[in-house]
Picture (cartoon, rainbow, N blue to C red):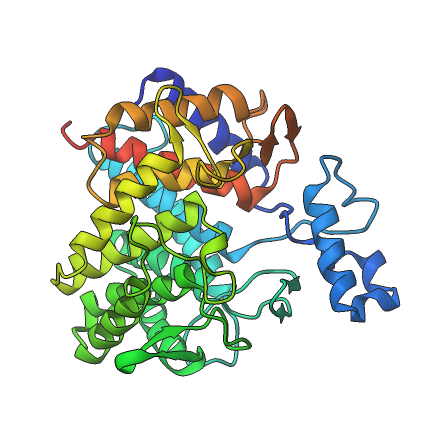
Length: 401
């Protein structure tokens, strides 16, 4: 599906990330500042939120000055791990430009062991959070507080690693995450005995994409355990979200934000999670919801002539480019079995991103807003994401070889 230029760009990204040891800064790591933590402002909700946003939005990287260290991000490591699992499958098919099966298997074991070591402690099952304090408008999460979002990517990555290495440690760790979802996350009750999962154990916010990532975790684990209780919980949590789908196919973001905020990659998360439930739980009851949601996503988040990926839908601000959207777009096409039909658009998305957002050193820029670039080389967002996304496109394009 991709030409030589994409292989070259991906290999350049791979070399950059490996040279950095997958350690880096993150757009949201401002509260790791030793300077900020030494002030009374660390106790102020407003100051924490403002400081994170200032650091995130600044195109100038003040992190060394503010004593913000680089670190491992568990979600970033999970994205890299799944990407290498995709490269391993490519090598099995004869495409060894990114390494032999032996080399890639060694890398997979290295990252899977690291991911297991990064898990949060003292919860009912395996779970993962971020390596920084995080203040949102709705709640505050101390560093390493597990979230359903980070955990979902870690579970998928470890299951992928298990399928390749047959190391039972990865399977046992991933399967135990079902206990985290069912016992540690809060349930937000909905009509008809349905519920949504909270974002973390410390909040009671019904964020729709996050709840569906809980659905996705349970669906993936059900594949291995065939525990009907997991399937039932996955179904009820998915139905709670689709019952709130808008008539045009779009989804609200949450009970708190409601109709006002819709974006590309969170929509992709929702569609992927619903499709995962259908495939792994042998239940196609959400197919119309998926098709309606996909059509809305396709019509509202892309310039199909250029491959430009919008962050927000077309009736909102159009100028922001964020590579999370481009990466998740490639994955969404793959996971929804739409890659072949939309092959040209997929190619355009990837090529536009490479042409406009990749540095000569191989890493990708964080964001572009109109003609202003934020070129800080964050490791998780966007570089782990682009590694993850393009690896799916490469694998999908090699299906028939």
